[in-house]
Image (cartoon, rainbow, N blue to C red; front, side, top):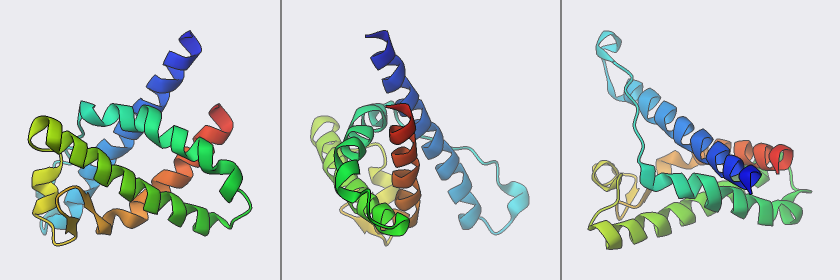
Length: 140
């Protein structure tokens, strides 16, 4: 039982940490004067179950089906599924809270899909999927 709780916390913390780093670094792209970049990142505790349960479970269930595919193909499959999962999760959070945590920022982007996901994050989701594949393979 305690091992399961530790595993959930491990995956949740890894996911939230990566998101904080990603949001912090993405601000560099928006600033013209790098001396004024403070690199504050952010996330939401609402995302913890997504990183702790949904993403590792999805990868765990897919692993046998995609294990023979090349690395990039597996990453693309994971990225597509992460996009679908993010869209559904943000839509559900929108229904529960009248907005999802990232909705305002997502809607400000020309790459937004209804404020629930962003297609320009596709390369980051490839990396995230492959990282979680590695963690699932070596942790679970």
